[in-house]
Image (cartoon, rainbow, N blue to C red; front, side):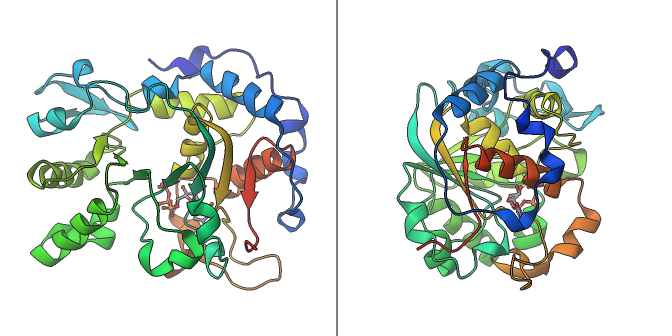
Length: 319
Ligand code: CTP
């Protein structure tokens, strides 16, 4: 299952893709951009050598039984039991099977989006992916409102929803889920043992509310395979961020991917401070001290792909 260990040799991506990653500076984010369909297609095929997002993005009901114990993805010495509730929520078939979109927006959560006026541009894409249940309504002008695919890192429950300990907090959480309509709600469950209680709290709640969303969880091999893909391209990350993970997976479904809200730096190109998230005043330095991620390194890789035309990264205001 740890396919990256027997990974294919480095990819078909042009060597310039990774050779000069270290030369990229945050000051040269240009606004002129041309789509390089050949490179985008080559990346899509290359990702497929490590994983098939269509299959690996969704743990299916038939792949686990209620009561079975499975290893935590990032803590393999510990095991999680699949509850009946979790099992009942898993899809019976891959949710994005055969889907192809002309353009997708992948919205990261950086404060660079504040004042960007990118909302209507984001909402015009065919498919819209957002991370970690970031709020949208009060920030509509800058981030848009539509969401087709929403991720939820379980750690946000104690941080932003008081661990769902009372009816008001639960209602706020359920309201956010209702706004997703029939979209996909993707929970990277079974990562590490301490998050287990939050996974159970969310799955219990989804099972009891009448929501039209489609809950989903990743297959157990997904994270390792995604990491393997980036390692083979000399992007040495211990654990991909949700944003990088989503870019990698959606290469399968989207012809063009446009990134918004990816800016893991404490100031913008004019030297103005940029909060870590667009929806709260947390500084980037607070975050970077405690994170398992290598966001600036990821940014350099994604920005290089922007320069080569494989993806479009928006870091300036939209006009
Ligand atoms: N991001 C970014 N710059 C920031 C904040 C976020 O590039 N200042 C991108 C990252 O790829 C991140 C994604 O936007 O994964 C979603 O942001 P967030 O919810 O803040 O992710 P984290 O909780 O920080 O990290 P993760 O869920 O990846 O563990």
